[in-house]
Length: 241
Ligand code: NDP
Image (cartoon, rainbow, N blue to C red; front, side, top):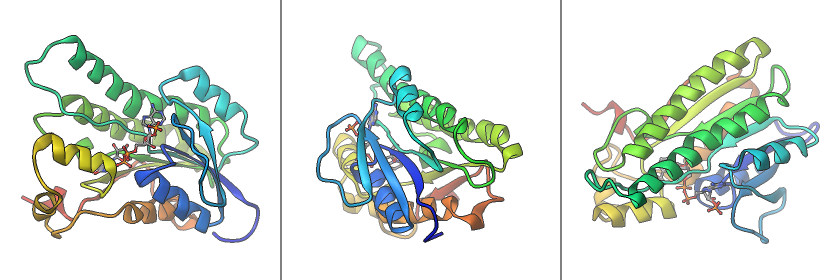
C-alpha cells in the first residue's frame, strides 16, 4: 500500500540482520519505521529512526509504545539464540535459559500487549519472527526451542484476541537465514555455511530479504484474512519426511 498517510511500524531488533531487512522493505512500502534495540545506532537508512529498547524491560516497552503518536504494525523480531549443554545444570546455563525466554517470548508479549491497545481496527498487524524451531525440536537448544514454540502459541492466542477488531497476528518461521546469528550457530555446532545449505531441500540458506517479503505481504491489505498462522520460510525443511 504505497502512497496515502504514512503508516508507522516498530521492528524490534530492526537495526541489523533480519530486522534491518524487514525495516528496509517496510520503508520501501511507505512505512516510517522505528527500529528498537539495545545498541545505539546512528547511521540508519532514510525512513528509519532508532529507539534504544531492551524488550525484556516491561516499563521501557510500555514507555516506548506510549510515546508513539500512532502505530500500524509491530514486528517482534528481537531474538537471542544459544546452545545449552544437556547436563550443565549450572548458573550460566540457567542464566541463558532465562535470557532466551525473556528475549524471544516475554519481550514479544510485552511489545504485543502494548501494541494491541494502539493498533487500528481492520488494518493493524502484528508479525512475530519465530523459527522452524517453533515447529520442531533440536537437542542442544531447549530454551530457544521452548521460547519459539511459545511464540507460535502466543501468536495463536493473540490472533484470537485481536480477530474481533480485524487485526491480524501471524508468525514467520524461518530456517537458516544468512545473518550473524546463523554464523554464531554454525560455529557453535561445528558446521560450515555450505553444510547448512546442503541440509536444506532447496540447497541454500534463505536471505533476510526473503523473510522481509513475507512480512510486507502480511502487513498489506491482501492478507487481512490470514491470522494465527505460522508460515515456514525454510526451503522445505519442515516439509521433509
Ligand atoms: P541477529 O543476532 O543478527 O540480530 C538480533 C537482533 O535482536 C539485534 O538487532 C539485537 O540488537 C536485537 N536484540 C537482541 N536482544 C534484544 C533485546 N533484549 N531487546 C531489544 N533488541 C534485542 O539475529 P537475526 O537477524 O538472525 O535474527 C532475527 C530474528 O530471527 C530472531 O528472533 C531469531 O531468533 C530469528 N531467526 C533467525 C534465524 C537465522 O538463521 N538467522 C532462523 C530462524 C529465526 P541489540 O543486540 O543491539 O539489542
